[in-house]
Amino acid sequence: MSRADAETIQPQQTLRLREAIAIIVGIVIGAGIFKSPSLVAQFTGSTGWMMAAWLAGGVISLIGALCYAELAAAWPHAGGDYHFLHRAYGRRVAFLFAWARFAVITTGSIAMLAFVFGDYMGAIVPLGAYSSAVWGALAVIVLTWVNARGIHASASAQSWLTLAEVLGLVLVVVAGLWLWGDAGHTMPVATAGEGAGGGSAAPALGMLGLAMVFVLLTFGGWNEAAYLSAELRGSRRGILHALVISITLITVLYLLVNLAYVYGLGLQGMAKSEAVAADLLGVAFGRTGETLIAVMVAVAALTSINATMIVGARTNFAVGRDWAALHALGRWEGDRGVPAAALYAQSAFALVLVVFGASLRSGFQTMVDYTAPVFWLFFLLCTLALIVLRRKEPDTPRPFRVPLYPLMPLLFAAVCGYMLWSSVVYVKAGALAGVGVLAVGAVILLWLEARGGGPAVPAAATVPIDRRR
Image (cartoon, rainbow, N blue to C red; front, top):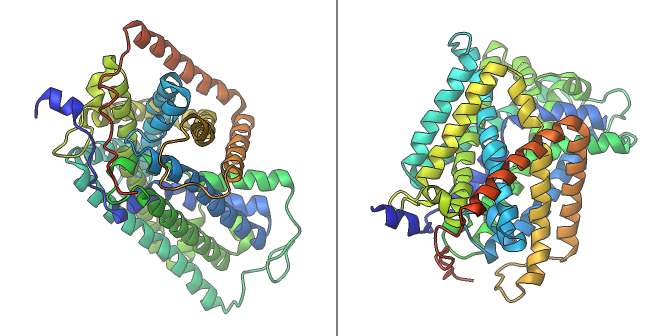
């Protein structure tokens, strides 16, 4: 294929519904479900309020997914959030979002997950003083090779990894129920401050809000489905089905896993645990359980890395189509269905962050955590883009419209605003790191505009929209 062809060819509808679901589930179910539940139990103080918080996380995520489904169904595009922000606010805001994703959010997530994988693989097969970084770098390299082979190879790998991940969570549920049955319990273990039925006075509003921060972080990532909208087979409403099925499945799994933790450890034991899943499997299966949890977390990390690579590269691809100076990123390999140059750039920067993280040890994780304000800022803008585009492009066909408009998008925007505020308050000085990232992006934006900065591909050369409505 010639370079000119690669720069004009568009993504094709090759993904099946089950593959899209595997990618979404794989992104969302990461290492968080093995850590966050103990913190949520601590902040809520009762079984009833803890379960309510997790259920609320699923409902809030579903509301957000309905908002994204309208955007993705109306404007299917490999750029996902980038494309929505571009239409609503112009390409300057969209570029700053893309820069934040490339510089920290996506590549930082890949690198951080690589360290999670490395930590647990290193516990099984240590590779020296920098074992975690070596394992993490190997994971990035191997998964980049898998993704470069094409969308079918990466989607197939994602399906198998997600299946293994879900089976791992099922094992946690089985362990909890086995311990519950073995102890002869007929209800969750009562703890100080809650009655036999798991009820308790409501936690303080601040504590409940803090619990929801961790719940929503554990549910985070479903919005990445928007990047798959141009490649999903069938009608434009297919992205709605993928999101609803995925979030429903994830919510059910999270509720079952938290019940298993309570049944197996009791609420107080769960709240005090530093590694709740490891403690549960350790009680249930001894040393074998400790190895099992290491494998489970490693698989969860791999699943999230692979899915993040798939969707992350598509933002870089969209930027390459919009800026002539970055045209190399806008090449789409039609025979493989992958933006190869964008993928390689993303992985190379992720490897740089792995090396950087290895030199700073814990400093890298802190750096990534401090980018939360930037993430929630753009998530808020993207949600409000639904309202902006209803006014700006009222005649655009919308195969799906979010129900109870504008209540639902405003409700989800309020949640994003609260998360933005919470993340700024929590990290405090860390918000300056996000401002610094955007400042660097603004300088690059000025440089691009100084170069004439026209689109690398004519505006008409967008994703085909001759899909069934």
